[in-house]
Structures are given as C-alpha cells and as structure tokens.
Image (tube, rainbow, N blue to C red):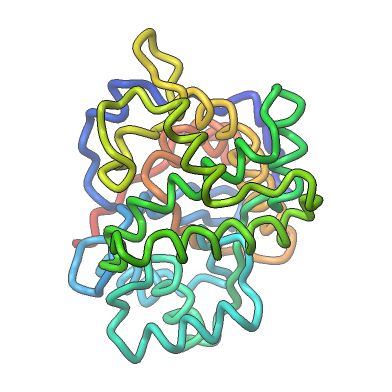
Length: 276
C-alpha cells in the first residue's frame, strides 16, 4: 500500500466554496501506480461535463478499479444502476453512472464511505447523538432529491420517514434512539437559522465550515467531514495493493480537502487533465 498521511487533509474554506472549478481529471502517478481523480459536480442525466469526463476517463485510462461516492455497492445498488440506465440516469447521480460504465467495461467498482455505524460512533465522541446524525443525513438528501426531480412536498413526509427507518437499520441504531419524522421536523426547527423553509435548503446551507457566521448544520458537517475523508483516503490508498490504475469519482470538495494527501503519497503534485 502507498503510504497515506491523513494529517494532510485540509478544511474546506469559504473561498473554496465560492471558487468554481471545472470538472477535470487530476492524475497522480508513481512507480507504475496511477490515481485518476474526477472532481465531480453532483448532477443527474448524461449530458453534462461530469458524465462526459467519466465516460472519457474510463475509455482513455482503462482503470483496474473504479471508486464511487457510495456506501453500499452490492446487489441492490447494481439493480438500481440497471434501472437508472434504462431511464438515461434521470434520477441517478454520477456514482450510478460510473458504476454502469464500469460494468459495461468489466471493471470492478466499490464505494469508499465509512459505515453509518462508524459515522455515528465517531460523531458521538464529538458530542452529537445518533438522532443528530440521522437528521443531518436526511437534511442533506433534500438538495439531492431536488436535483433528481423527486422532491415533492406532498410525498416528502413518507419519503423522509422511509429514509430515517432505512438509516436506523443500516447504522444499527437502537429503537430507543430512533428519530421519527416529527422528531426530525422538531430538530430542524430548533437548529435552523438559514431563514429558509425545509424544502428550500440547498448545498450552500449545509456545506462544511466553522467560519464565524456558520450555522449549526454547517458546523455539524464540518465535524462529520474528517471521519468520512479519512476513510475515503484510506480506501483509495489500500486499493493500490491490488491495482495499478484507480479511477475515483467523488464530489469536487473532496479533492480540495485531500489533494495534499495524494501529493505526498505520490511524491509530486497532480497533473490536471481537461477531457471536456
């Protein structure tokens, strides 16, 4: 395994969040090992720079492994990917699309997220309850559902309750700590200082920061983010024990936070390749 120094992970600053970075591939290489990192913009459909970059990267670099921004990549995920391919990925994100292309090219793929159980345990050490974590993951789903065209006020309560129940099972949260939909609404009202109603929340309202004017959701995300990032980078590093060419498709901010980890791992700055 390539040596990974997780202390090199940096915070996502307000300037980072305001700066537009076009989708590209950043290539890191050393001793025959190649990391191709796509700083994806979260999108749906197939006609956009993220999807075009994913398509061209798989064809051009012929990776041995594709790592996508998913937690579970088992049978149910494959079923969903196949369903989405039939509808031209109108709902599915770039993770589903990258997995679809990987399967078409007989390339293995996997997710890199820590388990919900590990996330919950890590956040409890920082003073957050399982309910806080469950509520935040539901909150951050709202911009995703809006982007997918499935955010509907009349059905939101049912969708949200299902999301909470699924998260509870996956994280092994005991019944006594379960968060109901009504409990979630109370949590949101208690902590919401954005001036927006629930279904108007967007990614800017929850991006990870501890700036002087950061809201509760942003601070929570800032504390949660290192738990994710350390796990993601460790999975990427371990992948090189079996593979020489690894393609990573993750949100733009992750590369910002971990670019120095990879720079130290490979011994030189990455080379940016614009494929669109």
